[in-house]
Amino acid sequence: MSTNVQTEIQTEIAAAVEKRRNFAIISHPDAGKTTLTEKLLLYGGAIHEAGAVKARRAQRHATSDWMAMEQQRGISITSTVLQFQYDGYWINLLDTPGHQDFSEDTYRTLAAADNAVMLEDAAKGLEPQTRKLFEVCRMRGIPIFTFFNKLDRPGRDPFELMDEIEKELGLKTYAVNWPIGMGDRFKGVFDRRERKIHLFERSAHGSREAVDTVVDLGDPRIEELLETDLYYKLKEDLELLEMAGTEFDLEAIHAGELTPVFFGSAMTNFGVELFLNAFLDYALKPGVRRSTVGAIQPTEPEFTGFVFKLQANMDPRHRDRIAFIRVCSGKFEKDMVVNHARSGKTVRLSHPQKLFGQDRESLTEAYPGDVIGLNNPGVFAIGDTIYSGQRLEFDGIPMFSPELFAYLRNPNPSKFKQFRKGVSELREEGAVQIMYSADEAKRDPILAAVGQLQFEVVQFRLQNEYGVETLLEPLGFSVARWVEGGWDALNKVGRLFNTAAVKDSWGRPVLLFRNEWNCQQVEGEHPELKLRKVAPVVSGQEPEDI
Image (tube, rainbow, N blue to C red):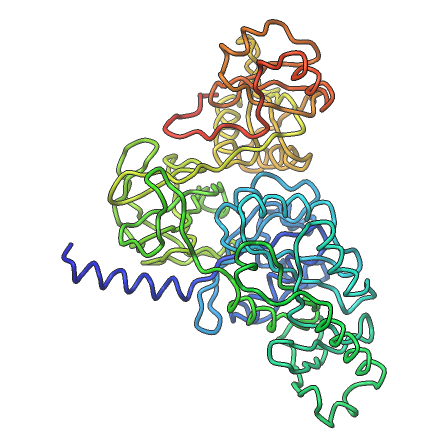
């Protein structure tokens, strides 16, 4: 490649990176995540009318929830990727599961995100699920934007909500906009960036973009547009924010130390567009990724990417398997030939797709920060690196400690082939972790999950997609730890009580404990035994066959 051509490509990539933004939404169930997702798409022109998530008669299902089980329950079980354009930017929204028993799919999606939007219900504030996901964001040091939702319903005091984040998460807050009223009296927000009041008109269930009236703080029309007590309350609140609030600091936002705070109502569209505009200004663009050969800049001319998610049967008509690839550097082009780091093989990347929930359209190119879908004929596994140029591997995606374990039985021997195929593909996809008894005579797989719903999803999908009925036999353990030093280290210790030794899909020893207390007891009695909550990252090694 000549120097001029290389410079041209780098200039093209740099311009694309400037216009890319990528984020995942983290929230507790029922905070309104799917509704907010749809309203962002509405403003991006990606959909023309937002369907409310709750199953009302004659309403279609939410765009991002495609699996039959999600549609039955009105929840997001899997993560999908939604790419849309807004104001000259390409936005990649990584939609994470929003149910009580979220799975590792959420952790993996955060590995591909550059920013996170923490969505909270203004009546409830911080909730357990949000805290768990916040910790994963903190581990990765990614910027967090906070959106307090459902201001059109009665809620807690805005100062109290911000104070809770500062005290409980140790995260400084800066209010980018401020609510005017709450519940039935929620009239709009004051935008501190532009120093303007935005008053909204309600539309039917917020199915279209909100119409807002914009006025300056001292505009005489305010007296006609806003009740006197709301106006004076707003002025008092703003004075208090100026005196006692944190100062705006973009570097602190990018370091994950300060969260910009927004107030609004996704259901009625109040404040959604203001949030989107500020997000584009403050969010991190696609950045550097760590690899075995050092930091990889997004503007480097050689293409690199990693697989953060696999999904089978997104389109029931085609029995397909899709690998979701996060582009990290260079330019992706259709039919390009790349190296697959784990196997050492070369792979042609044909039939790339731009993903939009269940809908696809083929694409010819993509840039750092984008997510592309590739048909996966059994080549890709989660955490795989693909590259052109010098050999490298990105940091793998860790597996976290499961909390529920059960033998998965196949009561029908004639369905053994389908059972094996289904379990193998669901494991590959990361729907659940698969472990096995250390006793070779016991060949039934052990499902290991973060939440009960993962078990239900696996059984539901084995039945629906592979035609296999299964039985679950729960095991009485709730803690898993990987053994450093492998089987040799474990064998030296001798017999352990109240534990079970099993092996993961890569044949590595995992100890299962009944509870945390049992685990601490074994660690206390055997200090030479080093146990890990997170599995060592695997590279260059295939999992064992079922």
